[in-house]
Length: 265
Image (cartoon, rainbow, N blue to C red):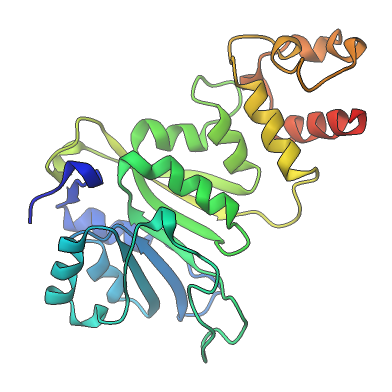
């Protein structure tokens, strides 16, 4: 099977790395019968190690040729392949209630060697459905992985860092050279794990997103300039706090900022 550029396919060829990715996933509820969704299984390099675990596994694959390949080579996947674009998939009730998951609308982990052309979109869709997804383990382009888990003050810290870390704790697990794929991508890769945080954000999520995106709309400018469309109080904008640039603020700073702005609206 040949990789297709239109799907952003780079097939993992290193067995040890595939096994390590599968082993990096914790269970949803502590039981061995956890719901797991693999995105973009391709030729099943990672899939076969997931099938070796006691998991309630579904895979979603947009490429019809890959779907046919999976059915021909993995009899265990019959009835478990969703032939659809993940970005168009309705995640509600994806895993029906059963004897292992008696609650309605059960949760599930996400795992995959993600197509790099939609990897950030996968993260944002997970955030929109965070009530369903307690954990993600995925292969990303290294630069994207570093952005997602970046700390405040670093050059990589940005919108996706803040929005993700507001709801998930992130960890870069290991890096992967481009020689471990066919065809080799032009970039290096890395695997990260995201674990959902407990509790509420502490501010309105919609306004929080607006504040974060507006703050980073011109990341080299001070907050007093970028946030002017959201803040109608010149006195607030004259405070020392607003002389900072957005990349130095922590998630808790953005939460506090959102609450201040919200009280003015």
